[in-house]
Image (cartoon, rainbow, N blue to C red; front, side, top):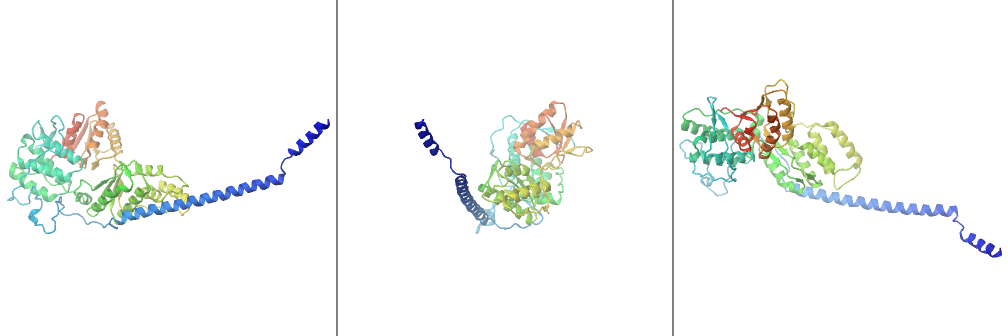
Length: 472
C-alpha cells in the first residue's frame, strides 16, 4: 500500500494541468503573432499589387505614346475614289501606277493580263443575271468563270482594291464570252458599293460605247453610307480583332486610327476574341474613348460577347494589376446603352476598389450593334431586310429569317441594303438555311448585287435559295 501511495502521489503531481491563466496568456500570444503575420502578408500583397499595376499602366502608356493622341472628326466624303499608291518624293507623277479605267475616253487602258491568284474552285458555277428587259440569262461554263470566282472571293474577304484590278484586267482582255455582261456588272456594283461615282461614270461611258445601250444608273446613298464608303478597305471601314485582346492589338488600333481620319463611321469586330488581358483592355479602352470624343459613330460586332469574356477574368473584391478590364467593361455597357447592367457592374467595381461608382452617361454619338433588331422584322412588311454586311452574328440572322419564313411562304429576302457577305458567313448561311428549304419553304433573295450573287453561286446557296440579282 505504501508503494502505490508513493507512486500514485508522484504521478498525480506530474500530471497537474496548466493553470487557467497560463492558457489564456499563451493563446493571446499566438493570436497576436498570427495577426502580425497576416498584417505583414497583406501589406506585402498590396505592395506587389501596386507595383504590378504601375508596371501595367506604364506598358499601356508606352504603347499609346507611339500612336497619335487624338482623332479628328472627318469631313463628309465628296468624290471619293479608290486610292492608288502615293508618289514618292522626287518621283514624277507618271511613275504612279495608272488607273485601269481612265477618266478620259481618248486615253487607252493600261494593258494588264489577268492571272488568277486564288486556287481553282473546282467545277464551273452558274447563276442567274437579270437584264434591263427583266429576262434571266444563265451563266454557262466558260473560261471566264475563274475571273468571276476570283473577284467574288476577294470581295468576300474585303480585298476591294484587288477586286477592281481583277475585273478591270478581265474587261480589258475582252475575252469573257457569255459572261461579259456579268463581269461589267460586278465592276459597276463595286464602284456603287464603295461610293466611287467618278470611276462609275467613266465605266458608264465605256459601257455605252461598247454595247450601244444605256449603262446602269448610279443609286444615290444617304450621307452616312457615303462617309462609310470613303475608305478603300470595304463597305464600312472595319477593324477586326483577332483571338487575343492583348498588347498585340496595336496593329488593329493603328488601322482604326487611320480609318477614323477618313470616315466618321467605324465598324469594330470582336467576334473572334477568345481571351483578354489587362494591357489589351487598357489599349482598347483608350481608343473607344478617343472615338467617342472625336464624334465618330460606331458599329460594334460581338461587343456583348466581349463583355462576357471580360467579366470572366474579374472577381468582386479582388484587385488585379490594373482597373482597365473593369473600366472597359463599364465603357462597353455604356456604349451599348445598357444602363441596368452598367449600374450593377459599377457597384461591383466600387466594392472592389473602394471608390465612388461612376455615373451612367448615355453615348452622345450613334452606337449600334450588327443585326440590330434584325431578328424581329415588322410582321406587316412584305420582305425581310438584310443588313449591310454579313460577317458575324449569322446565327441570329438565320433565326430572324426563320421567324419571318414561318409566316411568309415564299419568304422574300430584300438584299438591296446588302453590300458584302464574308466568305465564312456565306457558308454559315448555307448550313443554316438548308433546313428551311428542306421543310418546303421557298426562300427568294431579291436585289442581290452581282458580287454577292457570284459568291452565293460559288458556295452552293443557289441550290436552296432563288437568287434574283439586282436589275440595273
